[in-house]
Image (cartoon, rainbow over all chains, first blue to last red; front, top):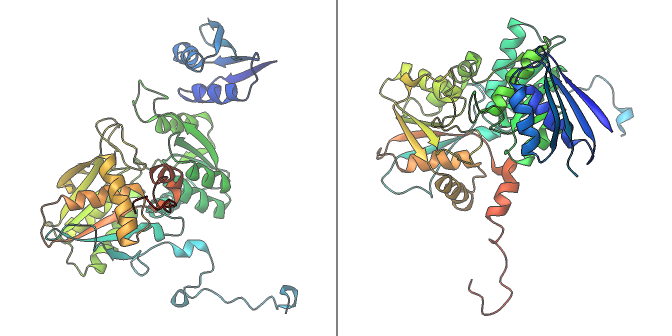
Amino acid sequence: MRKTLDCTGLQCPLPVAKTSMALRRLEPGDELEVVCTDPGSLSDIPTLAEDLGHTVVSATDEGDRQVFVIRVAG
Amino acid sequence: MTIADRRPDTSLGGDPALRRYEDVTELLPSVRQPTPLVRVRRTLPEGGAEVWLKLEWLNPFGSVKDRAAAAMLEGLERRVGLGGRRIVEASSGNTAIALAALAAVRGVPVTIAIPDGVPEEKQTLLRMLGAEVWPTPDDLCPIDHPKDGAIALARSILASDPAFVTTDQYANLDNVRAHYETTGPEIWRQTEGRIRVFLAGFGTCGTITGVGRYLKERDPTIRVVGVEPEPGHRLPGLKSFAEAKEPEILDRSVVDDVVVVSDEDAYRRTLELHRREGLLVGPSTGAVVHAASVLDAPGALAVAISPDSSMKYLSWFGELVADDGNPSVFDEEER
């Protein structure tokens, strides 16, 4: 299953907190796409995902937004 | 007689003299209805200060924070109104619980960013009161404030939706006003102006600033003592300024001394207060009483704030006393 979490317009650390809660509600193997507009997320979101043992499939900086895909560890 | 048989006009009506109240908010403290002062008689060494504890856990929502929450909510209502609003606050639990209860009475939703290390009891109470709860690691936003993750999260939740308003207890002058207008005058009146030393923990610093200011205006020679935990402490509600930012509302000019207390001393004192005084106090009271025990103030009348009771920390104390109080079952066991 793939879910998208819209964190556009949100400031640090709310995207990190929301991503952390979202990851807890997913099953192993699920993918979470996180869309942010806070440049700080480029370091914060991958760090959070790796600290929690999940895999960062992609982290893309599109200039005005940042998109991450995280696979939940199983 | 069944309930259905009762006439609708038989309401008793409130009567504080009979301790009968129309609404739970009428139980909030005031100079006319102060929280009790109880002397600590058995746990402190002879020849030291005469210490009286102000039992703030006998407030309706269980802590000293009832005062700040009521004043801050009243301030918000006056300044911006509460209709259609949602309240967000960072709290280690007690402010949140009081706010959630007071907001519930008014039908206002509450969102709380709470440090994820606080006892489960507090989080459960918040959920029971209908609050939205965000358990937050202290290091959630390490670049900004290394140990203030909940404060940083509350700020970003506030910015996420214009319906949010915050009581912002670390910067809200209503927090100080609550203590300047109630706790301070209560203590002055209850001690008949004989108080010489006042002790309170450093947390949001509303209590020490508000009470300290009131007492210093009455008598500038009253000594005001702040109690601070060690870095890395486990004393909810207290802040070590070696690791956390000093709140904007702290007025250092009313603080004469600071005593730093270890977790070990605070927890040992908390158990002593249970076992020798029958006082069901929380860990921060242990810290404040320990600070009082090391003061060089022989015979001085000291008042210390007891912010909350042990009831919201039972899961923690359960670990601490798991091996105590078990009956001996073998003859050879020492009693």
